[in-house]
Structure formats: C-alpha cells, structure tokens
Image 1 (cartoon, rainbow, N blue to C red):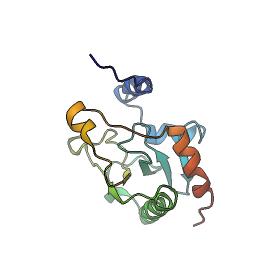
Image 2 (cartoon, rainbow, N blue to C red):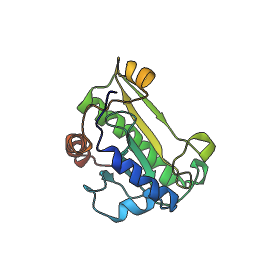
Image 3 (cartoon, helix red, strand yellow):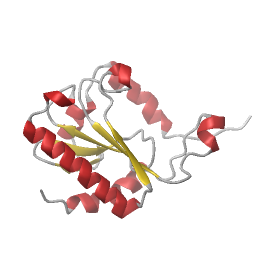
Length: 164
C-alpha cells in the first residue's frame, strides 16, 4: 500500500466542525488577525481572503462584510467594490503567479456547491496549462505545490499597494 502524507489535511477535517456549527467564516474571520486568517485585503464593504482548502495554489475569495446569501441582495457600493476586487485580484495573480487562465464564479446555494451558502462570495482560481494531471483522476488526489503561508507572503505585498 502506498501512503501519501498530508498532515495539513487535519485542518480540513477539524474545519468540518465550523461548518457543522454554522459558523460563517466570512463573518468570523474578518474579526481576527489578517495574517492568521489569510486576509489579503480589507476594503470598505468587501475583503479578499485566501481559500485555506484551495482547488489550486492562489485560490482567492472576495466577500462582502455583510452577511447576505446572494448577489442580488448586495447594494451598489458592495457590488461595485466586490467586482473591483475580483478585477484587482486577477491582476495581482497575473503579476505574481503568471497563470494561463482563471476560473471565476460564485456558488449560490448549497445545491450549487456553496460550502457557506449563507454568505455570498466569489472564487478566483488561477489555472496553468498542465495543472490537471493524472493525480485527481487516478488517485483522487489534488496536488497543491505551494504552502498557504508561502502563497500569502507572495501575494500580500501586491495587495498592500492597492488603492481604490
């Protein structure tokens, strides 16, 4: 039997308790320390946070501070800032990580795949040619080539330069 050591997965397993307790990470994480919670940028109405269980290295999320479950409930200021931050995040990822493309989207509702369906957020997933290899198909394993802290440290200086 082959073993794939992934000690960081324990955080994911323990994280399931937060979801079960109905803790909204998009409400609780902005109350804490930015570095500890992987918050890259704080705007007036919205913020950018790293996905700590990423689909790919550099997987970001943009969310409003207000606990709203769908895009159409956002006011004009929230909508404007949210999409401005999506644009800036893509720009920063292009500069810092040089991806070949992006997946950008919102999963609205549990049936659509939302892990936190009570708080709308937009995912930005950088993609590279060849980033999907045999591992997810054969081994049901996704390989993330860089640690979260390293990615945070790489992206944070770019977000610190942002001015609206």
